[in-house]
Amino acid sequence: MANLVLYELEGCPYCAKVTNKLAELGLEYESVMVPRSHSDRTEVEEVSGQTGVPVLVDEDNGIEGMPESDDIVEYLEETYGDAAA
Image (tube, rainbow, N blue to C red; front, side, top):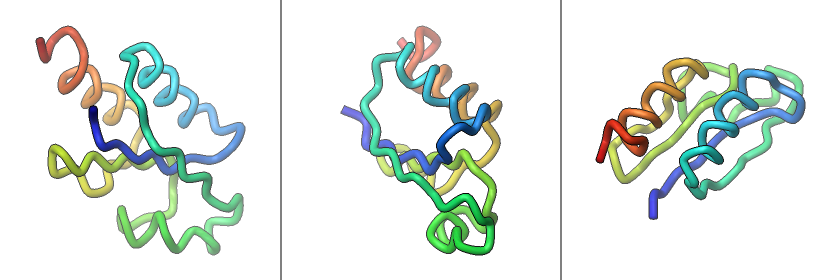
């Protein structure tokens, strides 16, 4: 099983786009909810170099902190979707 970690924020539409893709692909992942305040998001900043979410970590494939929901969705589809089969 994939070793995925998603840094996300409750109610974030960009995060929902990623979680919907994860569910569609049947992927299990660890969810890390980040604080609402950008200044308190030190953990996600250490991982990705920025404070925005969502951020995906996929240790199995060397992804240490991918930002941007569209990029994450595309990555998940290419790596774990039908295109990967």
